Length: 421
Image (cartoon, rainbow, N blue to C red; front, side, top):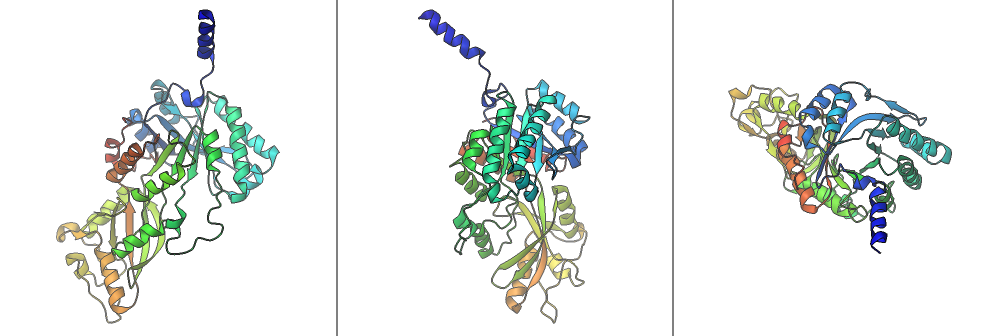
C-alpha cells in the first residue's frame, strides 16, 4: 500500500499543469493592455511599473476580413522585446491580444468549419512559435447568430494551445435588462446575446469584462442623475460596474473574472431641454492631460459626479460670456439663448464649479421652454480607479484589467493599483 501511494503521488507530480495552475498565479491580479498606436510611451510606462502586473497585454494583433492575422505593433521587435524580457524575469505573463470587430467577417469565418479551424490553428501557432505565454481573444461586435460558432472556436483553440498556454477572453459587459430599459418594456430579443457566458467560462482561463464605454446603457442610473440635475455620460459608473459583475458572475466564475478599468474620458456635445432632459453626442475620447488645461483656462474646478468620475461643463462659441465665466450666474439674450463662457486665464477669476455651464443651460431651457447646448468632459482618475479596485476585492473576483497603459493615464493611478489582497 505504501508503494502504491508513492506511485500515485509521483504520477501526480509528473502530470502537466493546467493553465489555471501555472506557477505565475497570483491571488489578486492586475493586467494591462498596451496599445500599438502608443507603443513607445506605453511600453515605457509599463516597464516603470512592471512589478504592479501579473500580466501585460500588447494590444497589437488584428484579424483581417479574410481570417489572416496582422501584427500592427511590430510585437517581435523593440521596445516590446525589452518589456517581454522584464516580464519574464519576474514571472509576469506576457500575452498579446488578437482583436477583431468586423461582425460580417467574423460570422463568415467562424460559421464555416474549415475557416474556423484554420483561424484557431493560426492563433495557436502564433503563440507557440513566438513563445508567448498565451493569447487574449478580443472578438467584439459579434452577431447573435455567431454565438455557437464562437464557442466552438474557443473550444478548438483551447485544445490546440494545450495545458501550458493561457487562453484569455475579453468580452462585452452585460447590463440587467430592467435597468437597461428603465421605464420601458424590453423588446422580445433583448435577452439574446452573442456571447455564451457558460461556454466562455468553460474554455477561458480568465474572462475580462469590458466594464467601460457605459455611456447611457443603464437608463435607471441616467434618469436618477438627470433628476438631480446632473448630466450623465460616464465611462464606467462604479454602481453600474457592480451590477454588471453581479449579473455576469452567475455564469462566469469569480476566480476567472477580471473587471476592465478605463483610463480615458469622453467629450460630449450635450443639449439641455426643460425638465432636466439631456441629449448626448459623443465628440471624442481623450486622456486626462487634455481636460485639465481646458479647465484651468476657463477657471473651472472639475467635480466628482455620482459615477465616481471627474467632470466639468462649459459653453462654447458665444461672445457674451463674462457673467457665467466670472460668477457662475447666467444671462440670456433677447432670443432666450444663454451666453457662453469665454476662455479667460484662470488667474483672472475665481474658480467655477464644474457643473456651472450645465446648470445654466438647464435653467435657461426650463425658463424659456427651449434648448441649449454645452460641452461635457468626463473622465476617470486615480480615485475612480481606486473605487473599481476596491469593488473587485470586495466582491471577490480575480482582479482588474486596465485599458489602456499608454503614458496618458492619471499618473496617480499607480498608487492605487496594488496586487495585494
